[in-house]
Amino acid sequence: MSVVVLTNDDGVHAPGLAALERALAELGEVYVLAPEREQSACGHALTLHRPLRPHQLGARRFAVNGTPSDCVNLAVLGFLPAPPVLVVSGINHGANLGDDVTYSGTVSAAMEGTLLGVPSIAVSLVDGGDLDTAARVARMIALRVLVGGLPAKTLLNVNVPARAPRGIRLTRLGHRVYLDKIVEQADPRGRPHYWLGGGAAKWEALDGTDMGAVHEGYVSLTPLHLDLTNHRALLQLNDWSAGLNAQLLSATERAPRRVSRATPKRKPRRG
Ligand code: MN
Image (cartoon, rainbow, N blue to C red; front, side, top):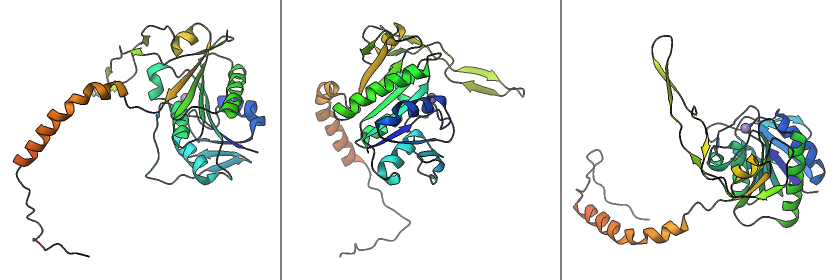
């Protein structure tokens, strides 16, 4: 039976993960590797400066002292008896839409799976929505991916609306209008401190976007591509190359040669 890995950024005890686990139970040998505590908005962080210690909570359930991307790395790179055929991240408590996906630990886990060559899905539920509905949607889409696969370097970002879905729409990412300000306050000793994320969220035109679909009561399904190169800009900026090269090379010629005074000059050794 094929191995399927579930993770999230709300922590291993989150109800969204349990709902996903129940819904996908029959799709394969389902393993859960999830952060031992909440990691929302941790983005794509990896833990490189301390060891990861999976703590077994059940036959195929592990709490990890790390991030969602750490969990996916463990799962894909050898912690499990076989490499997974599918990574599903979620069901996140709250939507992951538009530009906000860049902060999302839920979406980053699916990015990590994709980078490691495993078809991956991120599933999020708008605040106040029904977990069982979201889990049913996740199961449908997971099955579809297991049967049909996904295009190269592409993951699916799924958002389920708060009310009973009117259908599923394939969408593009929406864009935020950044109105955020930092909020400065003073502590009891008069020292200033700052809060991020205070401003209201505003979005550009909703037509065709993930935000628009969810707003109108549809499940949004956005294929995300991990080739971050802007190929059109690459063509547009092509003529920068001659000028920048001329500048760089002439500056190098003029730069003074650095002589180290700390170590005596030695003949280079060969061999
Ligand atoms: Mn979260």
